[in-house]
Length: 306
Image (cartoon, rainbow, N blue to C red; front, side, top):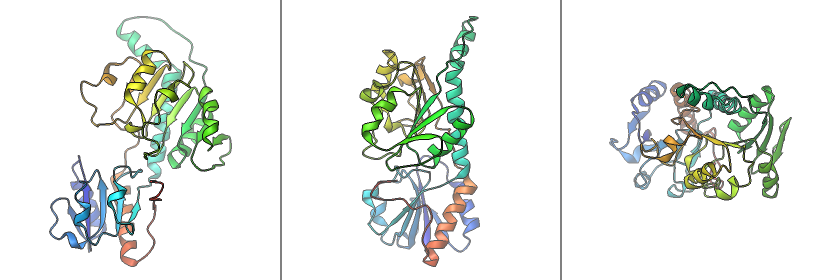
């Protein structure tokens, strides 16, 4: 068998070197430089070309190079292909730290003070008292964020597709309960998986249900947010501010209005970056499991898309 690395938009040399060291008896190739596509049974993918999948007749398993699998068009894969994702404990901790940091930055008005410094204005104000964080999507990353927020005296509610029971967190899973929760949200954190149902989830209708002082923090996928609707909400002061780490197209175009909007904080998709050693070790473990005929770890539900 052989492993094919098909990751668009980045130098894969370190990934391939690390995989080769962990799998000395397995051939590691990079798309499109693969001698024999019939030997490929395992693919590590991120935004792989759509026409690649049909050229892999013996494909058995695909791993996303990330915590989500939205970069892979699951409809292009045969039903018998197992799809897995990366689960990195450090990723969850990094995400929790990022979310806490940006919520505190908004609570303490830090961006306002940066602007006032540039204008040489001395205008102290009390921090906002707002303390209720609503997390959309309550998987591993969401639960890690909740734990960190609770430890810092925030109250936390969470929205998930299936029932969750986490101490001290107000968990809901019924769509009918969402409007009341949004009306009480001081900070709305998006950690939803990207599916056909969640694309464009944060739109004008949803934003209009938030209090005027609310802040949006999107650390999931750019496609969750309708950009025009967010700009409308900020310009009309429907909500107070937003921190965005993810975007429809990355890098963000230099002429995009997000760059210069005074109520938007931008970071370059850096909230939680995968560690190469951790990722390649998980991939190597699953390749060895595939060779041995064992069940692969971190499989997704292809029907749900996550």
